[in-house]
Image 1 (cartoon, rainbow, N blue to C red):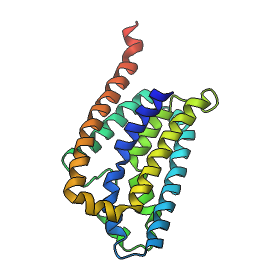
Image 2 (image 1 turned 120 degrees about the horizontal axis):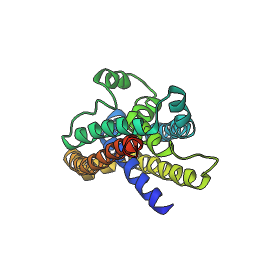
Image 3 (image 1 turned 180 degrees about the vertical axis):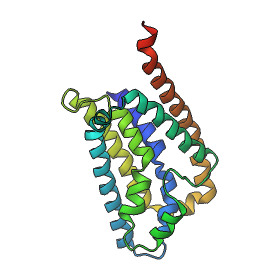
Amino acid sequence: MLESFLKFFVVFFLVVEPISLVPVFATLTEGASATYRRRMAVKAVVVAAFIIIGFALSGAAFLDALGVSVDSFRIFGGLLLFLVALEMVFARESGTRTSSDEQAESRRRADISVFPLAFPFLSGPGALTTVLLWFGPVSVLAQPMLFSVLLAAAVLVLLIALVMMLGAGRLMRLLGATGTNVANRLLGVVLGALAVQFIVDGIRASFAPLAGQ
């Protein structure tokens, strides 16, 4: 249980990238009151939690309905996470999270909690893919403890993101843009290795029946 918790926590933390939320949140809430910043941060985390829990509960059933195996999704998910890792390593603006048009729209919106904070930053394609990869093989009825442990890890990452958003002003003064990019690049290398492992595991599981023939 502890090993599963730690593994999922590390992967989900790397995908969500709470550190990268610091400059984004600071920019989107620049000049706003402390009450507004706190309300946006809390609401974003709550909405993201509902999205993630929904995918954790129904993601595997959705794949089954489409006739897609978890192993096939694991291969695609690994490729998607690998792209996210490349963006982190090269410090590029993440196309897997939000486009320039979406960012421009977010600046015109008074409520930034749902878009772009909850989605696509906290619970974007990368995060939802990770949830499906880990929760897909886990049944909430047959393995309630493991399901709860993984869910606790996801909630912990969201709470860390909440703390970082609430302290965005102080963290930006401490880290700066350069410090944030360095941290993201280091985390991107780790995520890239994990993404490759997802792909290898998916290919191995997909071709295992053929190898046994």
